[in-house]
Length: 346
Length: 241
Image (cartoon, rainbow over all chains, first blue to last red; front, side, top):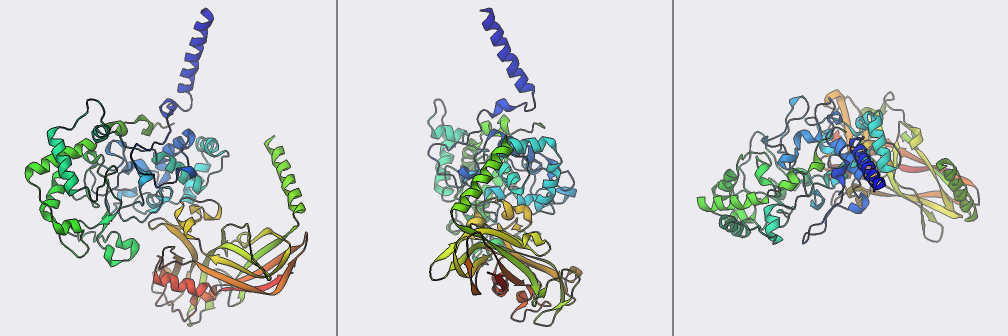
C-alpha cells in the first residue's frame, strides 16, 4: 500500500518534472495527429512525404513565431498570421512587414491548408512547403533569404537540438526548415464549428431559424464557388470588384500571363469569416454586410467577370442578416483557441 | 558505434560494387565563352550581336543524365540533379559508377522536371536555399546568366537572365544529346572522364542584343527563346576512354 503510494508520488513527480523541463507544453501535443474529417475529400498535400511528428511540429512552431527569421529581427510569420483571427492579420486591409513597409494584398487565413490546391490570392505558389519563401524573401515582409536563416539557426543550440530530434542529425538545410514549417501549419485544422456539429448531427446542436434560412440562401447563391465542406472550390474568380487604381492588381493574370485571368483572385474559404475581417484580396470591406452589399448591387461587369455575377443576385436586408447569421456558425472556437498553436518561447 | 556501423556499411557497399563488375565515369563541365575558359567579372567578351560584356554569374541545372550504350538502350545513371556554378569548380564535376559496356553518347536535361517543380521543398542541389527557386510563382530557375554591358540602360548596366518555367506552353526544360565522337569502353575498375564545354556565348545566339533584351526573369516566351539558345551551349571537349 505504502509502496504503491510512493510509486504514485514518483510518477506524479516525474510528470511535473517532464512538464517543467525544456518542452513545457508537450502535454498539449499528445495529438500531433493529422485528421481527415469524415466526408471531406482527400488532402492535396502529400503528408506521407512529411508526416508531422511532435518534434517537427514544435520546431515548425518555434520557427513560425521567431522574428529573427526577418532581416531586422522585427517580423515573424505570426506577425501577420495570428491564431485568434484564423491566422490572418485581423483589422489590417494589407499587412506591414519590416520597417513598416506595406504589402498590396490582404493576408490570407491559414487553416485546412493540406486541401489547398495552390497558395496566395493569385495561386502563384504550388505547394505548402514552398509557400513561406514568399513572405521570407519579400522586401516588404521579412526581406530575408533562406541562406541567412540557415546561418542564424546554425548558431543556436536550441534550434540545432530540435533539428537533431526531428531529422536525426543537427544539420540545418532549407528543405528541413520548410518541411518543419509545413508540419506545423498543416496541423491548423478547422472542422469543429457549429456548422460542422449540426452537419454531424451532434446532440443538442441545431441551427436557429435565422441560421437555417441563411444556410438555404447560401446553398442557393454562394455554394457554387464556396463549396462545402471547405467553403471554397479553390478556383479563381473575378467577382466584379471595381479596380483599385492605387494597386491596379491584375490577380491571377500576373501568374499565368493569360488575359482571360485578368482580375481573378482565389475563392477564399468562408470558415472563421467572423474573425478574419477585413475582406477581399485588398481588404476593402470591413464588414460582412459590405460584402453582401457588393454581391447584391455593386458588381462591375468586366470581360472576365464570373458567370454568377452576370446572372446577378439580389438580397433583401432580412436575407443579408440571415446569411450573416449562417456565416457566423462557421466560427470554430476549438481551433481558434487550440493551445497547441500558441507561442511558448521554449 | 554509429561510426563503426557506417564504416561497415561502406565496406559492404564497396564489396558489392566490385562483385557487380562496374567502373567509374566522371563528367566534368568546363564553363567557357567562345571556347575559351570563362573568367568571371574581369574579362571582356563580345557577343554575336557585337555587345561588349562581362559575365558575373553563370549557373545551370543538369538532370536526367544518361549514357547511350552502343547498339542497345540507354543506361540511366543514378545521378540526381546537379547545379553547375561557374564560380565553384567543385560543382563542375561528378562521378558515378556504370556497368561495363561501350558508350557512344551522353544525354541530359538542362533544367528541372515538373515533378521536382511541384513536390515541395527538395534537398541537395534542389534545396531552395541554393537561390534557384522563385518565391512568388513557384518553380525552379533552371539557369542563370548575369553580367554587365554598357549597352544596357539598367541599374549598374546589368543584364539578368533567370530562365525557368515548367508549365506548358512555356516549359524551359531542354533535352541535350551529345555524341562522344569516339566510343568509350568501360572496363572493370577503369575510370573514364567525359569533358563537356558549356559555352556562355551561346546564350546570345540568333543575334540577341543586350540593349533590347537584358532582363528575362519570369517564365514565358522570352525565357523559352533563351532556353533554346543555351540548349546548344554544350559540346564534348574530349573524353578519356
